[in-house]
Amino acid sequence: MKTETRLDKKFAALKAEGRAGFVTYVMAGDPDLETSFEILKGLPGAGADIIELGMPFTDPMADGPAIQAAGLRALKGGQTMDKTLDLVTRFRQDNQDTPIVLMGYYNPIYSYGVDRFLEAAKAAGVDGLIVVDLPPEEDEELCLPALQANINFIRLTAPTTDDKRLPAVLANTSGFVYYVSMTGITGSRDIDSGGLKTAVQRLQTQGKLPVAVGFGIKTPSHAKMVAQVADAAVVGSAIIDQLAAHLDDQGAATEGLVPAVLTFTGELAGGVRSARS
Image (cartoon, rainbow, N blue to C red; front, side, top):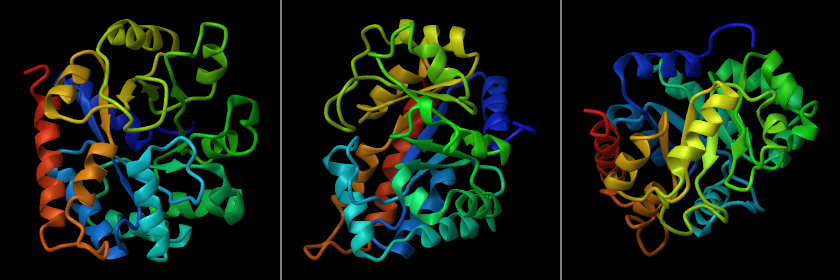
């Protein structure tokens, strides 16, 4: 990395405040482009410290039913990579501080063109990437070019990542480490607190980076529990579920959708902030 990124600054600020961060995940273009933008725009005010923005893909193998459905709704509505990047551009018109991390799969980036994608992502105001199907052995494909462009490349680690594998996973990771608190797909079951503190400390010690914990955080109490041991708590499927609950019979946004999503986000943020108060 060449210079300090928004993610670096955000985690430094959180450390100075003595609290964990709250990371929210939403799918770009779900359930439609403008509703998606209204949610994105409102997330910082609802308490999101960092935003993960999903890049819709037709074969999201690591995602659970909620996020799969969100991606399909977005694609059905005509969401494209250009439109996803434009969401970030529009967001940056009024918010220069909240980090945005694009999360998804390599195929849409490869199809777009890596160099073209990184140039456009940087221009839009993207701060980091999470690409779940690119292992460390493929770092030359995207990870190293992203770092050269001063875009953080964030890796996923899991309970199954052993001591032999971990150094390779962490080698070119920057921004933060994303610890998947359980095996399986996103949103499949509730988070298990057993062993979480030990797992987070292991990553903090070996990686020297902030550790964000996700998968299975569904309530403010879950968020509080994670925030007591990790540097950040990540919530995705539960927010998507809240969105889906406010669609009409045709799958379109109802009038109360955006307020409901942002209110729920605020409740989760309250859980995070209460952890070290």
